[in-house]
Image (tube, rainbow, N blue to C red; front, side, top):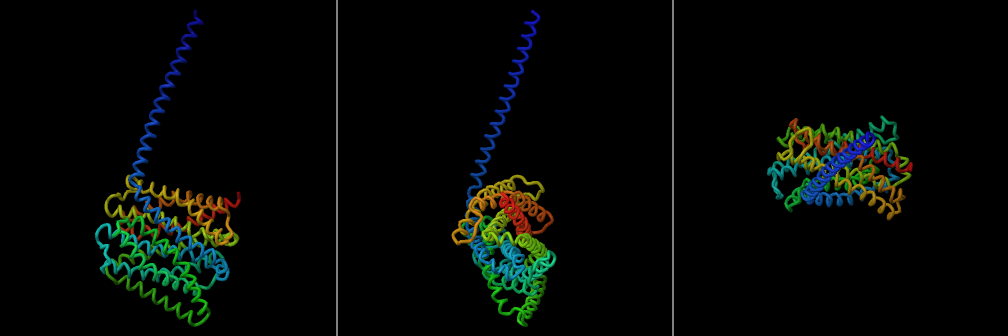
Length: 443
């Protein structure tokens, strides 16, 4: 009887334990299903609310990818020039980034002006528009000079074989003037007309301008080298060099003594763009350090402007949207992302999942079509996707904290966020790309 009693008690405890476990498991599963349902519901709401933004941004990014692809093809065909003009690869990413920084910031300022009503979408002359244009011209000359010096200095620091500082400066400034002459009217037109036709400039303008910068920069550098070939090692080259230095100094003086908006843009932009130029040159240094691997696999050159350009476009879209949100009060200038800021994070994450494999595919297809030796379809897509997914969290953090911090210290995010974030993205993007290339080639 005692044994039977013990068995009964053990059986009862076991059944109670199983029942408790089953009830607990059921509750946990129920809660999990409720959370999953709420998550899917919130995701459904997110996609429903963000459908237009994602659609507009993806269209803009895809158009940009085509522009970046042409830049990549041009760069892929420039392999002999990279050998003939040592150090040129150090200059190129900085030059591409500088165009995006200067004209992307112009587009962002125009977009914010359109949002808050200080600028009319009609093509009318105004002090705001005129001073923005004047500031952009000054910044183009000054930053081109600085970029030429920085490229030469970095080559000396890292022991790269390179051209002289006069050659770097002449190429940089002439290339900046040529590309700026095309980008300035394009930026104003894209900003005003996209807003006039119901497109949000924050989703469209910045990436299109950045892609235009990528597209125009390399041909402009090629044209600048053609000019250099004519005047190189002669008195004419030194005359150009001295003339450019005088133009830069004069531009700074005009900017510092001009109207309120002109002074504000120049004063806030010059320090930022100096940092950006150094970061852009760092990006070129990263690539130049693996020049042998790149020249052995020319399709990588086709991918470089695509990857850097699209990464810069993603962080520019985020920066422009956050900047407009801060100006209009929709997004608080806090140090913790929440609400509308997290929604923008989600938009960028979705776009990155789509765009990075796409640009790897595009780079391979075009390289194969033009007879440029390729890593292969799988490897190109893997390189682009791996590098992009590693880079995406960096883009989100940089875009958010630069926006919030600059606004909290009473600096205009339109002058700060896009230039610094895209410039920080360039070396980070090239580092991730080099890492992914080395990792995939080792497979």
